Length: 416
Image (cartoon, rainbow, N blue to C red; front, side):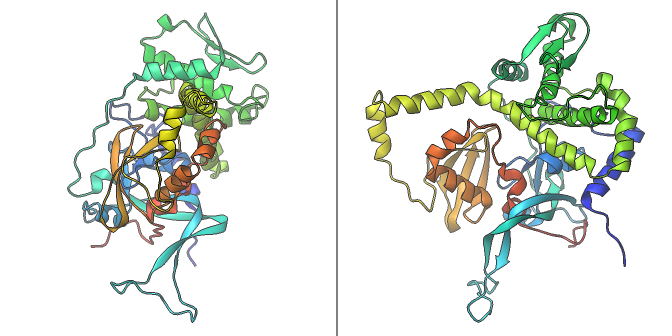
């Protein structure tokens, strides 16, 4: 019987080869102005953790990804002969076939068996095959929406809101866990502000290891293996942040870790996916600082309204009645670190949506996981505001089985 390697091992082997040949995403990252984290073409959700890593390793200029079914629904079918990319993620839901009391299939009007989305008692690993925007027919070239703030301005906000202690001077760049201090050269010593903030955010990634933050092993000066693992995590986090903020990514002094990373992945293939999950936690922790001022303003406004300082606005808000089972045109729903606006309700319970964070517009079916998540967020809006203040939020992108239609394909090759 043929033994198939798990996806984590396949990707680790590919990373080892890329590292040794100098072609890894660490050594040759895409630093174009259109650089972005990969996202799902239908839901607009960004892929994260191991899934983001796998997709970034494909070195595509287009960050859009879709299953073959999603591509068909978008009227941008997969080009014949295209090779798909598998991702693997933990899902709390699965699509099950509906049967009646006698166990007979329940059919739709078109004769196909009806299915339903069911929450599982325990999350399970799901594989799905995705195709890049470059592999889809009739899809307009992707261009990144202009951002309100420059990358350096966004990074400065994160550093300030983190309250991390940063000392400038000299040529050294490191995080000192004993004093909980980041050491950096003066900003003027860098070639440009972007390089300064790239290094500052990398050290902030190390700063998150503190026991009162993400609590990763800190005594890495003695344990060399722990040091190698930490640098793998913080470099992945820096890579993810570079895509998020449009900052450059360079290995610089970390180039000496290439052979060590290759060796540890050879010995422990699962380490790469573990590192990617930890890197995502680092990124999530840092990105919260960008929203801190905005969230504090939301909480303060809510408190003012409770105290009667904005009674007219509260009365107006109370008159808005929403159907608990559907979304309403014009409403804006905070969720997963951004806000989603309902632009229109189309036929067949499909909504035209917009992610107000990056201005992407997309269509969303009422059977999608994002719809369920937005509905829950809207119906429990008071809880959502409170949850914005916690360190981490559950990310829909990794656990949303409907983003990839729960497609478990047996082949990488499109058959047409």
